[in-house]
Length: 209
Ligand SMILES: Cc1cc2nc3c(=O)[nH]c(=O)nc-3n(C[C@H](O)[C@H](O)[C@H](O)COP(=O)(O)O)c2cc1C
Image (spheres, rainbow, N blue to C red):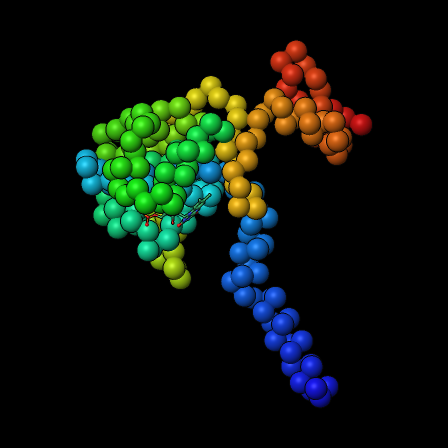
């Protein structure tokens, strides 16, 4: 093989590494994502989906963003009804995440069976026992590529007493327990400024030095 041909292969491989969807997906698998279920629609015309793309936008006014695939069954409902629920799952709710990922073939209202939902006046469904459940109104929707970025204005918040979250990392659900994992992090020693102060409640706060 000529030197030029080898260089061309290297150039193509490097380009692939720089911008291919496969490498991008591999990078994103390394990003720890908090797992939420978005609920969309009203009455019996409802669906929902598992997402890791929820992120805070601003605290004042309270608003968030979520990125939704426009091929999903929730997308037309979100666009039409404009109100939606964001349910931040706790560590025991991986089964609910599975139902709303569509993997077992459940559709629409079927995904809601087996859990308790609070229906807000807007029609948005909030999950009882979620780590936090947030009712939103879509303030803006930006359609880009395969997805839509939905900017949700927060209308109502429910907080549970649970302290263990459900995360997704490297294709697996992972529980993050505030008590257990903070203790583990303290064992491997956190950098200065985030170091433990083993108070009576076993929580951690800043320690100087
Ligand atoms: C852990 C996890 C996170 C996901 N995050 C997103 C996301 O942020 N945005 C998205 O559009 N789809 C996401 N999905 C895929 C949707 O859950 C899935 O495509 C959707 O539920 C399929 O819905 P449908 O059968 O109603 O079309 C995620 C799936 C899983 C398992």
